[in-house]
Length: 66
Image 1 (cartoon, rainbow, N blue to C red):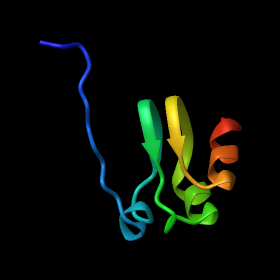
Image 2: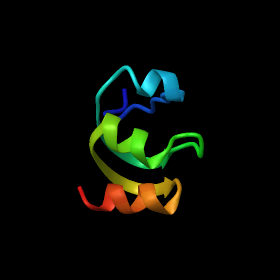
Image 3: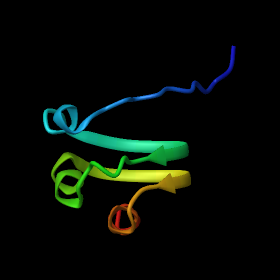
């Protein structure tokens, strides 16, 4: 069995408002355009991405600060 697993989290804006996230991503992180920078900052405490980020430029900058 492989030591790594692929998971997919499909979270809408309502879901994101209800949980706090500490995100570590290997591969690709996609933040939908419906997620505003204010919502992203409110919900995601930290994000570390080893791979591709598909998101608005403001969110990419926010991720790079962590």
